[in-house]
Image 1: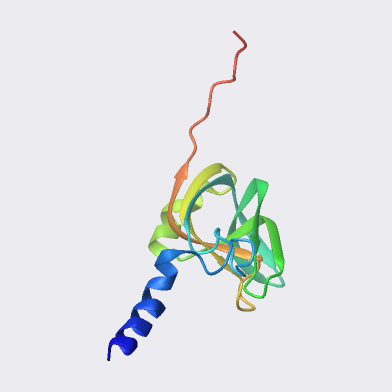
Image 2: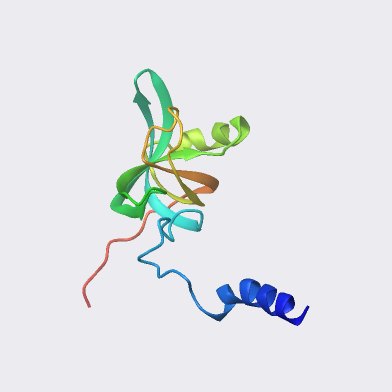
Length: 134
């Protein structure tokens, strides 16, 4: 009985005691599934007759697919918003916005960019005054 309990404790506590994989060994990058705040141009795009909303980033997102392949994308399809939310966000198309959401890898033929953002909020970025040298 003591041996059985010791084996169970070893199995359940081993991930707590230390990592079994390094970040480099993990096939899923830390960017996928985490909440991100992204800034970029909100656009309405077309792909083979299908329309979608996207955020175009100045710098690409770099991550790793589930099969270990690198994914790099400057354009992310926006997903997860209700029609009512889109009604209020349509006025922001063509402007710089700040999006908060979780990243996910494209999985279906209706995912038009390699990485999607399951969006929680879209906010306009107010015009910033030009930087001045002091």
